[in-house]
Length: 326
Ligand code: SF4
Image 1: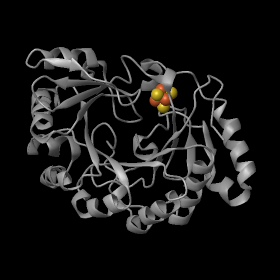
Image 2 (image 1 turned 180 degrees about the vertical axis):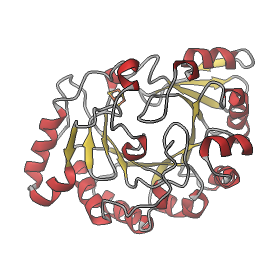
Image 3 (image 1 turned 30 degrees about the horizontal axis):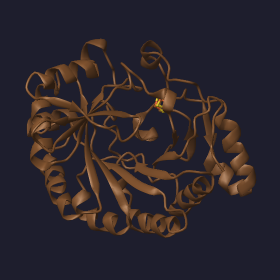
């Protein structure tokens, strides 16, 4: 089976937010500073059941997101469950984390075949990190990044959201981190989400980021690993940097992504309208696999060709990144 929408896009990539809890309160994601931990809405078994449904429906790439996915109390059992399940499907497994708990979980992730680890990191300066992320544990993330070199089956990447006036003065520090650690760094355009008070003057288009880096380094266009990031090598080094231009040059035409929120709602787009959801938590308890697949396929047909304009995104309600998982 393949999940194909009416724009002829094959959807083989599932991003699953397994918790709405986070140990950071980043400006662009968790500005309300939600730190009162709530019981996770989906049990381990419900998550596994939903993942199996999607593996059976043509998903070949799964990424766990959050919140902070490593915060789940039952994370170890869950990832082992996914590993066992995936023996029959051989999907590519990934996780996006802020890295604070990563050192403790790296061996387990490696053992469970999680190849792609994306680490969200927006500042290399302790004071600035505190200001952006509301936490002073930067060193833990840096240590985890350094220690990932021990795992040859893991390919890490760093994701950095650049915000004008906040962390754009660190752009060269991140390039230097990529050079030093030979780890790809991807600069992401700041996107409007509910409550993050996105403003035009904070936005840096990727073309401006490239221009800035090219003023110091020779950039050589590299092959893109996916339709999402535009990659460049830094001449004379093993560094690779990428740019994710969701706002100034979106890549919706090649979208292959589906999302599940931490409370079991399927979303067709990062910027779906609040009520544009399919309640998978109910569906897996009440429908046969065949009927559930039909429900998913019918829902997929309402997916828009591209995300709304920035002006619409600024006022979009119920688009909470903490719940969708980015
Ligand atoms: S904005 Fe929506 S449609 Fe566009 S690439 Fe992202 S998820 Fe896909």
